[in-house]
Amino acid sequence: MIRFFPVFAVILSASCNQNDRSINAGEALAKKYCQSCHAFPDPSLLDVKSWETGVLPNMGPRLGIFAFKGKRYPSLRYDRYVPRSYYPSQPLLQPDQWQDILNYYQGEAPDSLPPQKRLIPIKNDLKLFTASAPPVQHPNPTTCFIHIDTGTYPHTLLQSDIFTENVTRFDRHLNRIDSIHSGGPVLDIDFSNHQMILCNVGILNPTNGKFGQLERVVEANSSKMQLDSSFLIDTLQRPVQVMAADLNMDGKTDYLVCEFGYLTGSLSWYENMGNNKYSRRVLREVPGAIKAYLTDYNHDGLPDLVVLFAQGEEGIFLFKNRGNGEFDNMEILRFPPSYGSSYFEMDDFNHDGFPDILYTCGDNADFSTVLKPYHGLYIYLNDGNWHFTQRYFFPINGCYKAIARDFDNDGDLDIAAISFFADYARQPEEGFVYLENTGQFNYTPHSMSETQKGRWLTMDAGDLDGDGKPDIVLGNFSVAPGFIKSAVNWKQGPPFLFLKNTGK
Image (cartoon, rainbow, N blue to C red):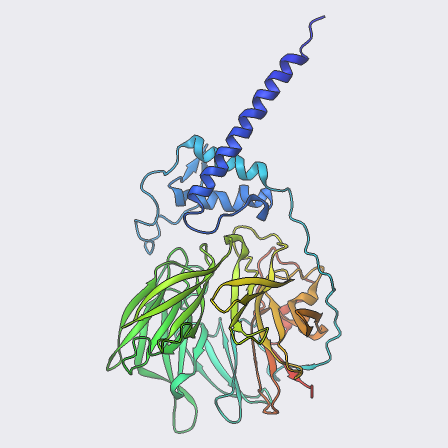
C-alpha cells in the first residue's frame, strides 16, 4: 500500500512555514509604512472583515497601490481639490510585499471583536435632572451645534441646524428669540470680545474643498442678531472650531482654526493684520484637528495650545509658543486610527493643581463600522511635567463627547457623556450617560429614558435658568446611516433636549 500521509505532511508544513514567513514580513512592513503616518494599528483592533473590505483597500492608494489582483481600490486621486502630490506617483511596495501586509492583517485579526465589559450597568435611574423640549418641533432635526451662553443676562441658548443653516437663539424657557442665516452649517461659535464669531463648516459631508468660513455676528438696535458684512475669513477646509486669541502678543485679536478637512486639512491661525485683513499661518498641515485649548504650560506668559487630532494621525499634541507666533509641537498622547477620537477636555480631576485630560473616542463613520470594546471615555492624569498616564476608562460604544462638572455640588467632578454611534438596539441607555463621582476614581453610571428620544451629536453644560447649577443640553442629529439600528424614530424627537439640574 502506498502511503501519502508523509508527503501531505511535508507539503502542509512547507505551506505553513511560508505563510508564517509572509505574516512576519507583513508585520515588519506594516510597522515601517503604517507607523510612519500614525500609531501602529495592531490587527487585534478590528475584525478580519473590516480589514479586508474596509481599511486595507482604502490604505492601498496611500502607498501608491490603486489596484491589486484585479480589484480596484477606492481613491480620490482625480478629485480636483486633492493635491497631485498626495498619492505616490509610484507604488512604495512590491506586489509580494503588499500581499505580506494583507496576509498579516487577515491572518492575525480576530473573526469578531469582543463586546464591551462594564462592571456596573447603566441604569435609567437618574433623578438629578428633569427633561424638557422646546415647544416648537422641527421635522427631521439635524442639530450640529448647541451652546448655553452665560455671557448674557438672562442666559440664552444657541442652536445650529444643518439643513436650514440657521443659528437660532432661545430664552431660558426654550422659547425662540431670533434666528440668523449663516453661509453654511455652524459647528462652533467663539464668544470672546463681546462678539460672536461663527465657524461655518461649509459642507458637513467629507470633502476636500475649501468652502468653510468665519463670520461675525453683531446685534442691531433691536437686539436681533445680524451678520457683519465687513468681516469674513473664507476658503477654509471644513473648519470645526474657532478660537480668538492674541497668539503673537501684538495686541490684536487673531483666530485659531481647526480645519478638520478630509484627506487634507490643517491647524492654522489667522494673524490680524488690521482693517479686517488676516494672514494665514499653518501650525500643522495634516487633517483631523478637532479641538484646541489655550494654556500656558511653562508659565512664560506666552499662549500655548493643546490640540486633539482625530483623522488618521490621532493624538493630543502640545504646541509650545516660541514667541512672534512661532510654535514647536510635542506629542502628549497617541492613539491608533481605529479609535475614532472625538473630543477632549482639560480638567483637574485629582486636585493637584495640574490639568488632566478627559478624552473620548467613538467616531464610527469610517471604514470599520463595527462596535469596538475600546470606545468610551478615558481620564489621563498629569504628573506635573506634562506626562500623562491613563487612570480611568468607562466603555461606551460610539462615545462622542464628555463634559466634566460638579453637577451634584459635592466638591468633585462628575461626567456627562453622549454617544453618536451607540448600540441603540441593545443598549439605548448609552446614548446619554451621567457618571456620578463617588470618590477615588469610582463612578456610578446613570441615564434617563427621556434621553432616548434623540441621537445626540452635540452637548453643552451651563447654567441656563440662572439658578446657580449647571444644566445640560443635548442636540439631536436624527439622520442615521443604514448600519445604525434603533426602535426609536429620532426624526420625531426634539431638535434639542434640556436637562434642568434640580439638585441642591
